[in-house]
Length: 440
Image (cartoon, rainbow, N blue to C red; front, side, top):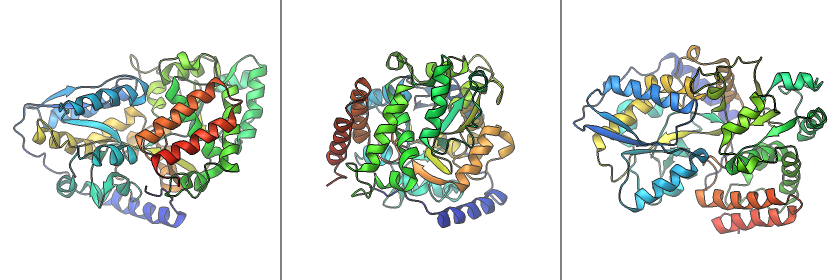
């Protein structure tokens, strides 16, 4: 597997490239002609924020390709878990949609590229100059043998700590989440204050959100370099070692501060809403939550930043950007290949990404978007993306193949049922790495 290590020197070069490209980005390309009458696009964007962003990008598509009907084949639930199951069934039946959403990284490469289900996009990247406006850190993650296989439309941050300032104030918390949670222990000390005040410290949602929490607690415990080392072949961080054991201990403690009904919640939104409603103080969730909090009704809650909610990075991860990227692919068996190219052209375009990302709560995958269009949160995230140590998300497809993610998720589910079984959990993580073929 690809190593996800990024050096400060490399990031400095990336920042310079971003500044140059932002100042002299390529001219807009003329939309490619097409004779297809429709394009079916498959995603899991149905929730607040993400549905708004998709609708905005579809508006751009309709303006540029008025003769093509956009067919929204989105499937709800589980941060894509349900959609991926439906997609797998369709692909097995030879009924591929014209394009589908896939996370950049191993989710795309190890699944769809390895199976020969998607085509390389060299021609599209060349005709649109798209590759020239992508960060140098991103292009290798969407490529195999030097050929790009997906169009990333955004950059999301996984390690965001959302919090309710009113709950913290009522509990007498004086620590500042933006600066004072340098360790998990510092965070846990505040959790004790929140718990004493009769509130839940950390809200948690359905099963996949526990994997999301696990990755960020582990990064906050062992740091960026050792997290990256878990995913190299062979791993340079020992899955059976003391570092992972310390991360597991912190994960168990974090779970002790969560709501007892977490596993019964349908998805991430109910857990985030617990924090907004004042029933919980904190929620660790990706920055797609910003669109849910701040966007207007009916999909958003129309809340005021810094008053109704605020944000920091998850405890112990200052200076680290845990990223994921949504992207779209060109199937080998697309029914309307020219219409798919039209969709991918819009998804890659500055107009498409500037319409989509401000509502989604993410930042552009492109480096030349107008930052004035974005929220204060997204502007902060863009600065961090350019300066932080970058690591890849586990659950959201960057560092591990889907089968490996599933094995880790199963182990986490069992651990949630009995957090005293730390040795069994660590043994399951070791076994999952061996099953993937990454661990000897």
